[in-house]
Length: 319
Length: 251
Image (cartoon, rainbow over all chains, first blue to last red; front, top):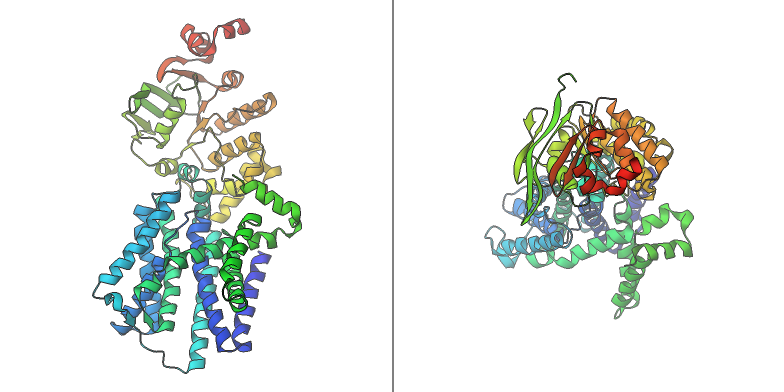
């Protein structure tokens, strides 16, 4: 409880201070980080709390981005109605598609979600409404350059905070306990009276809702979107790595993961232009070996830190 | 014995796994506030029977009547919502949750007769933790418990779900004699609250102490049913399950 309040306070204070102490380049980087924090936190709903490792969450990002493009440039909606509708469309998509594919578990579920993302991309590439492979333009925001940097940053930050607050409350309700019960033992959850099908689909839908909103902000920020970059698989990989690096199944873990991974990646690519991915990969491998439960675990279990903590982690996760 | 209400009835239940017939025409009745013991050698089809009743396995033929209605074909969670709760032979606590959270999940979901919100569920869980004797361990993570406490947690979780009928699948296996005694005591205490219970068990000491009636499965077929003393002295039961030495031991 106390830790949660500190977490929220830190995010708000740091989040609000950053844009007033840094230039536009830093604000742009911070916006990317916050968007990734939304993606990783959304993935955490289905992958972390409910225990279904989705490898296709980028599909909701793409759906959100394209929904916004269509709603703004074809239906003439303003940004905020488009943002909310895009979130809902992506969320409903996740909820509905959850019924068939959440019957699968483990690797099979992962592959199905991967297929879902690719199939949806193909659909977008071939529909007249989305103008196929040539991409879509969105209306330009009617504000100055500096103001628009602030605009996108604070919208992203707002979505992240709403997501975290909603998840905080959900975790203390039946819905949240249901998610975790399904992750911990689905058969036991089923026989105690939890309608696992509905719960899993709601989880996937929530994940889709916020991922879709992130896609919406991204689309408006870019001003022009194409199917390939908004449905790119590597972004799914990145959100998973961030969530795992920060700590799956914890509220702030994915946020910490997104911030640290982006900052590390940024630092490395500035200083070691050619071989930065080698360092980056090494850091990920070390993190997964020594702190498989993520940075969040190191923070909350600080008493245990030391060689014995790392050795215990290695022993636990050894095959 | 006066006319007692039947709460759960199996009617000629049969389960085929491809060519293998795991249960054949198994019929039984469970009366209100009764403890019915189910015994049989390994592979006799005891857990298969429980799986059919609880909806985890489809029923090849036959029917299950619960409180006067057929529950055949319902999903496990629907059967759980009706107040028919089972435990698992290989314990299935929610490992990453605390003992109290585990019990709370049972209270939050479970039978739909009385629905608790999440706050009431936690209060209910505290009560049940005291009832089953887990209150000292309530903040422990479930995966850190020893086997006796894990089995106890399974009982607590089932109890929190406000069942009318509970199927205990080997909740005493792997316990030492002292732990068995306290588990027997606990299960009787649960029965005294008006819950009907089917107990699957290998521990003869426990099954004798606990059961009002016993029925025996062998190769998927019911070979005996009745009062514990009669059943345990039945020639066929001794041959199939207890072994000759049991008779010598008893006498």
